[in-house]
Length: 530
Image (tube, rainbow, N blue to C red; front, side, top):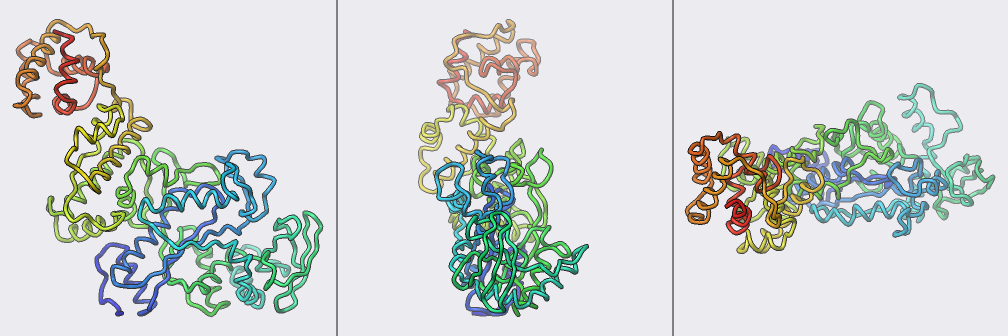
């Protein structure tokens, strides 16, 4: 074990890992933490924190460090609002003010609403190579694990109140307590602390049902610390060395700011190393992603269009404090192109200056679900893949068998995943001009001008007699020559050609498209015009 002299690279994850070791010293194990309240769909904005921590964990492990990566489900929080994208909203409203774990699953599959949201995330994170250790806070609280932390907060209530009051327009009342008690009768947090005995005894009354009780929170787990106290208490409990937070938490007087002060003055512990991360938007849709408003795109949604390595690339290649938007429009093609370029740079197939080479190589390594491949995989540009999947009408088995018969193993898996993403994008998000259907089985023919029909006929004979000698350049030149010889402008002919092939005026680059479709299908279509 040793303290490195400098970061492994200039990548932000390596710089953060170096800072953790420098500030926390040479430790046998480092603890990196993340977490969220599963009060609604865990969206791609929440995922930014998860993957940001995971990238730092990888950076630490690449330095030979032992790392515990924990992810807390803050499921013992209060159910405050029913998200707009939930079914059976009226039924869910009857559970407001209860712990989220007591709210039933509106889909009727899991033991609770919280668990339904948790399992969706836990099932999909392995697809992008993320494997945290999950901590379920309802279990921790109800097992009374935090009794000593609760007592410390009660003992130093005045200190906590002083810290919080510094950032409030009006001070907290003398009746304020750093704990929430869920009523043992109706399970709501609509309770008032009546007395604390100075050790582990609390008494309360509930305004919702009138229930009264005196309890010992070493034995009854319905007492919970308020969020701004709970967070620093758990930093000490789990010995957390690193945890990022969104920019709203990092504002002056925000929850991270007050947590730093509380963990020092109440729990006699140093806060973790941190950084703030910015919001993620959805291109074309303004504002912050929010579970409560139903304005959500989940990781599952993103993986429908972006293969796992490209999802990781989006986050590894962007500094956490930079806001960006997830795109489902034509930018999807550009993002795939950027990833492919990064891959070519990593394998030395494209030359860049040394500084960019270091950055791109590290970004590529962080983009991989596991380790980087030993040799460069076969690259099929996403734009070209959108053409292939439409030619094969979404039949990926046929596509892989016909187009990539010699590709196998992990390389085949990645290609098939890209093909699936291309098909999903074309059928769900792509602009209309990107979508087409070959007219192989369509017996109807276009009413073409005589000169246009003659060009189609000449094209048929060229392809029938000389297919094997043609490439994209030669075929393109031949089409232009035919048009000139027939006395028509090529720009006037191409809409006719696309109507013949696709039944629409526009389509992919004609020469490349014809060769991609294949001799048999193309001659079947053009043969109707002989």
